[in-house]
Image (cartoon, rainbow, N blue to C red):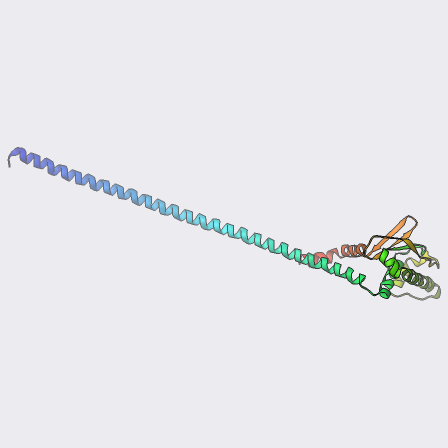
Length: 224
C-alpha cells in the first residue's frame, strides 16, 4: 500500500469512526428526548388522571347532593299529600254522618257562632232539605238551655260551657235562630247571618282555620 492509499484509508477510517460517533451521539440525544417526552407524557397522564378523579368526585358529590334534595322533596310531598288526605278524609267523615248526628253537629256549630240568638242559619240546598228544621230546633234548644244555666247557678259542660261564659251574656234569654230560605254553595256546615253580618262556618272553612291553627304542629310533622 503506497502513501496515498494509506492516507485514503486513514481518512476513511477516521470518517467512519467520526460518523459512528455522530450516530451514537444522535441516538443518545434522541433517546434523551424520548425519555423526556415519556416522562412528560407520564406526568401529564398522571395529572389528567388526578384531574379526572377530582372531577369525578365532584360530579359524584353533586349527584349525591341532588339525589338527597330530591329525596327530601319527595318525602315532603308525600307527607303533604298524607296531610291533605287526612283533612279531606275528616271532611268526608263529617259529611257522611247520619242525619241525627249531622244535625247535632250543625246545631252545636250554630250555637258556638251565635252572638244574639236572632241569627239566620243558611245551609247548602241538600242539607236545607235534609236537616234544616232539625238544626234550628236543636240549636235553639241548646241556646235556651245555655241561657237558663246562669240563672240556675248551673255550670255547662263542653260546648255549652263556652256558650255560658261567652255568648250567653248577649243572648239574654233569647233563642230565636231561624232557617233562611236562602242556601249557600258549600260542601257542608253552615253560615250564620245577622243582618249584614255573616259568620262562615262551612266545613271547608272550619278545617282550613284548624289547619292554620295547627301550623306549628304540621310544620313539625312535615320537616321532621
